[in-house]
Length: 197
Image (cartoon, rainbow, N blue to C red):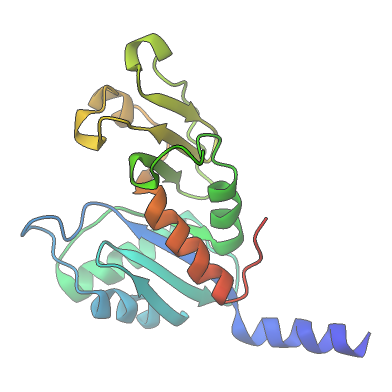
């Protein structure tokens, strides 16, 4: 019992890991967000252990409580204040990110991870939408859940047959990452103590 209490106290001190995913930054010359500034924006809000992965707006940090949509808005404002860039983003608990990633029904040893995409929805704002008819998308595959949109894009993202209007119709903000990046974020979370589902 003493060890369990100590472990819980240590977890309380460290905080709960979260993942923030910024949309559409550092592509070409527009919307440049240095990763040092992204980490600093999280720290401005009192978050701890901020770490970034790659240069595409993948942030992992600890908070003293579970975060939601209002906290995502606050982080977006902090990034805008530091960089002048207004970038949409989603924030998820580390455990939720790991669970959604592991639940990818399209993960298959024969599919290249860079051609698999996961669009994560903001926690607390379900997607609530049906995928376009499979016959309209073939050879692409798409699976829509309340928390994510999973895609297999054999011809690449730019050749996707999903209409832009479909994405605009979603009830929740979503931000996509290819599965190669998702796996790297999973590994980072695991190294910080977030268990795999």
